[in-house]
Image 1 (cartoon, rainbow, N blue to C red):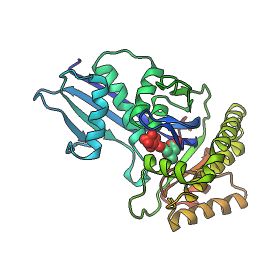
Image 2 (image 1 turned 180 degrees about the horizontal axis):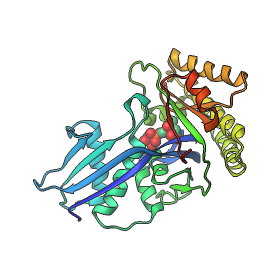
Image 3 (image 1 turned 90 degrees about the horizontal axis):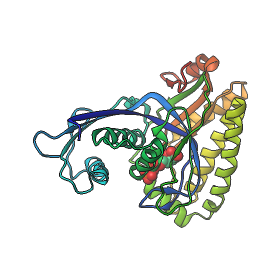
Image 4 (image 1 turned 180 degrees about the vertical axis):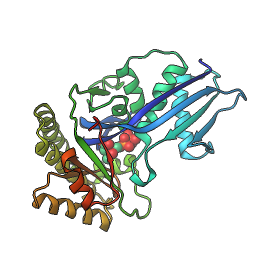
Length: 314
Ligand code: DP6
């Protein structure tokens, strides 16, 4: 291996969500999903061949105990690449995602780690192959291998090597994403457990793949024709449809806090007043707003302290 190698990968926000696995070991999804990457917001990972012969994991400069999930998952992933060879490593992970934004960092984290491993071990793997590997760390990580709009195709092969991100060659200058952090309650059920519960207990889940397929078509159409209303409406309805399947699970999975609902209603009021703003939500209480650059001042006035990201620059 190299003495050291480094890589960056962006966070991503799904406009058509991944919810449900057809293979829980390999993170193979039931439905295709589509996201937009967040440019400079994400994870930078540096790998160093360990001078002390011991694996070590650091997160934002702080060493992580290896019996804790963060380091344990990360080193299990590194092991996929080492394949039993004695190659001790120090892993330095830095997230520049503002903690106040309430964004999950596992997608950018596994994507950056995959890229860094490819460089450290000088493997020279193709982007789609790296994306398929990142997927094994966390499903949504396969989309963080690419900038801009990315589709994650479900694939048909049992080994999952055809289930990876595919960049969509389209830009949308002026597209903005606003990160609304609402008050968080007790720790939510993670995506993996949440998906499994939904599949096992919610009859409503049967309609989810149909919803996702229809929304994916609409999003492609919206991106191709730069139809912002179609993009926003589709993303919002897709997120609410996913949440409907979660709420219909048993025990119920409601990720929303009162402040989440208040923020949704504020979005709907702004739309009533003629502003083109929409939202999406993942498996947590925070909203991600979708709007265009000319409406940024009006959206920021309604959501003071909003963290705004321009995925394609503005
Ligand atoms: C609601 O990718 O975090 O954010 O594959 O179990 O690691 P695992 O799940 P993860 O799930 C993301 C779910 C989502 C929707 C999405 O990002 O597509």
